[in-house]
Length: 130
Image (tube, rainbow, N blue to C red; front, side, top):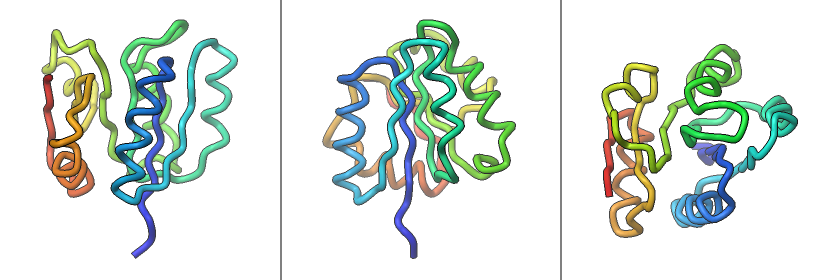
């Protein structure tokens, strides 16, 4: 079985690093994109197929919903699992209505994450609100 690959897209360096570390503990290959300007969106074009994509919901010049729509339209991501990774948890139903497969609220629980990861890759819906 090949190693799983996850992409993290966020504008917060600390959030990127925390999730990167947790994924590496699960032996996942991690690719991160820090979005702090419109120009950073072009970096998304450089990625090949990934298994799971973690998206924050708020960025300086776009939203996680817009990025979700953009990525879901690309053939290299058509089988990817999309996870909202966010502090914006006021409307979980809306997050799922937009097409996310799971929702992980920030901050993550280091104790719960291994089980959550297992559920995510098995395409089970995970909703974590800290």
